[in-house]
Length: 53
Image (cartoon, rainbow, N blue to C red; front, side):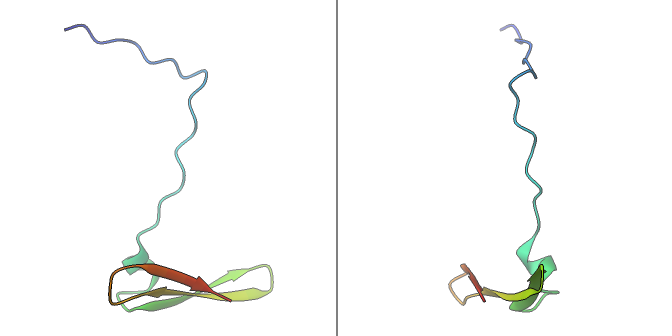
C-alpha cells in the first residue's frame, strides 16, 4: 500500500480545543466572558454542556 501525499492548499486549520473539565477547574460550572457579557458553562449530570447568559 502506498502513502499518498496530502495537499495542504485546501486544508482547514485545526480548531482550538479545550477540555470542559479543565475549564471548570474540575467542578461543574465556569464563567466565560465575551466582551462585557458573562456566560455560564455547565456540565450536566448526563455529561452534556449548557451555555447560558
